Length: 268
Image (cartoon, rainbow, N blue to C red; front, top):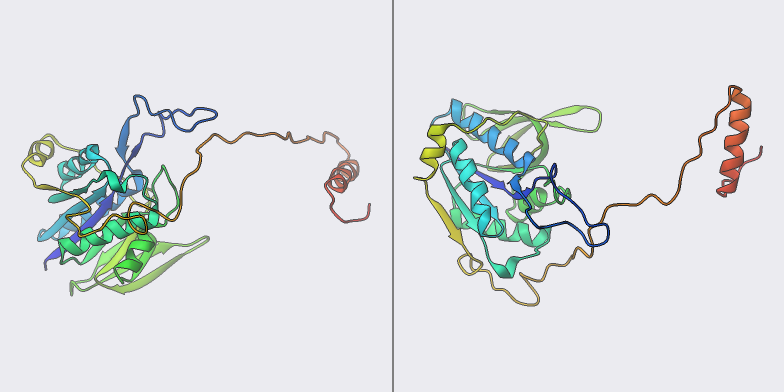
C-alpha cells in the first residue's frame, strides 16, 4: 500500500525567547525561529505512519521568507522525503485566507496525495484557521484536533479520534482528507546524525507566486482582506478587590455592594 502525505509547516519565532516593545510590537533583532510545535506533531504523526508502512512518501510544504527552508531541512532530517518552499515578497504579510490559497495552489501542483496534515494552529498567530480553510479550498473532508489515528488496511480510509471540549469522538473518514494536529497529541522525535546528513541530499523546490500561476494584483493575492494593525502586550488598568472576612454573610454583602456599583440589577 502506497501512501502520499503532504505536511504543511511554518517557521515561527521561539516564543520562549521572544521580547516585546511596550508600544510597537515584537523586537525583531536577533529573533530565533523554530519549527511550529503543532506542525512538528503533525510531522511526527506522518512519520509514525511511514514507520509502519514503508511505501509512504512525505512532502513538506511551507510558505514564508527564504530562511523558511531551514524548517523544511529540519523536517527532511527527521525523515520526510522532499520539500517545497513558497517564497515571494508579494506574499509578505498574507493573512490566513491568502496563506491557505497559496498552499492549496502548491498542493494542486504537487498532485496526487492521500493525506494532508497541518498543525492545529501556529504559536505566533493562534487562529487555527489555515487548516480548515485549506480543506475547504481543496474540497476535502477534514478533522481538527485529532488525538488518535489509524490507517485502515484498505489504504483508502482512516479511523481517527478527535478531542472535543469535554470528550472525544471517533470518526471514520475516506481519503483523501485533511487532519489538524496539536502538540498534545504526541512527542516529536529528535534528529539523528544520519538524518541530518541525508537531508542535504533530498530535493527542496523553491516556488514563487508565478510558479504557482498566481497573479499578484490589488484585488487578489498580496492584498489580504485582513490586516494586523498592532501587536502589543496587554495592560491591566483595573485592580481586583480582595474581600477579607471570616463571616460569610458579611463577605456576600460586600460582594453585592461591589456588584451594585457595576450596574448589576439586584436587591440586597
